[in-house]
Length: 139
Image 1 (cartoon, helix red, strand yellow):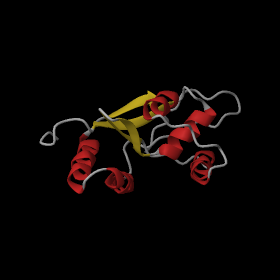
Image 2 (image 1 turned 135 degrees about the vertical axis):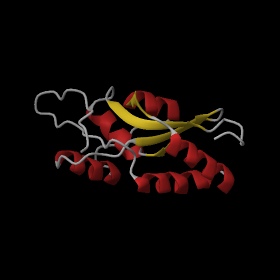
Image 3 (image 1 turned 60 degrees about the vertical axis):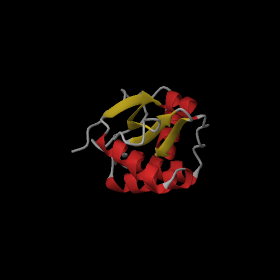
Image 4 (image 1 turned 90 degrees about the vertical axis):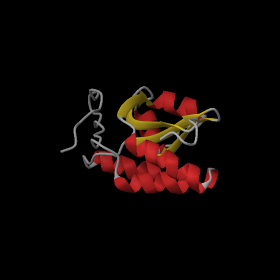
């Protein structure tokens, strides 16, 4: 059963529930995104690192700052889709983030990070981090 790992909700605020692990289809989404930026071999290795990474948490504002992104607005279709899940009490999947010498990138979960940021910029987001800058032979 998914745990409610959200911070204590303020009066009238719906807490965000999170799955205990990343949904399988999110790795496929991360692969699709990363394959636009990297070679197939590098993408495969990075997704393998994401699968092996331990779940941790970071604040929404820190994830966005590190990736150089601005949160999508609440009326963005992807954010709305996740907001509806939250209102219905459904848990969200943790986010997949990669970092390296070229910076940090949200491989999957940009809309989930944006939703958390719009509700509470300092809200915790469960995620898996993988280092894209490690030597190609490392996994």
